[in-house]
Structures are given as C-alpha cells and as structure tokens.
Length: 119
Image (cartoon, rainbow, N blue to C red; front, side, top):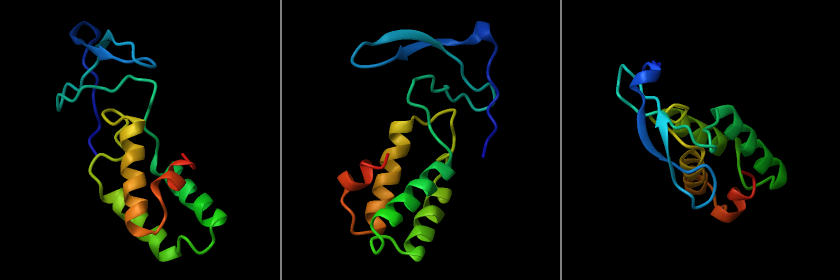
C-alpha cells in the first residue's frame, strides 16, 4: 500500500465538498505530492478491514447457516486483494461499503438489503 505524503498547505486545491445532504461547497483539498491523488475530506470516511470482518461475524451470528467459515475466508481474501480497499486517503466510506456488500452478496445467498442493515 502506498504511503501518501500531503502537499504543503499553500499547494492545496479548491474542489467540491459535500458536508451533508445536497449542499455543495468548495473546500481546499490536500493531495499526495508523490502520486497526485486528492485526499478525501468528507464526513463519510473509510474504515479498516477489521471493521468489515466484524460485520461478517455479526452476520454469521445472526444467521448461523448463511455464512460458512470458507465463505468468510473467501470474502476477506477478496477484500484484501482489492487495490486500495484500505486506502483512507482516496476512498470514501460509501464506496467501500458498496464493494463490501457486492462481495458478500456474490459469495452468499444473502440479499443486499440484509447486508446493508449491518452497516
């Protein structure tokens, strides 16, 4: 995983920012001086993979036969293999949740709405 280095404060860029709801504002965004990625500064921050492993465990506890140990391992392995899944710099929490729900739904017979209830 790439370690991002913030640009200097006087080099930040004005970009759209949605604090909550439909209102859109401009805000100064830092960017990585090594790779050029713009830092996500919204309220919907990404979480570590452990957060999603805990959610899988909760789903397994709630519906005992819905998720097997093998399915859990395959889901976690796929999430770990996704480039930048744990990149808190560029990924929003919403995008991360979408990836998680799609991956769990692919390996199990659970409905997306059921999975989303745990998030």
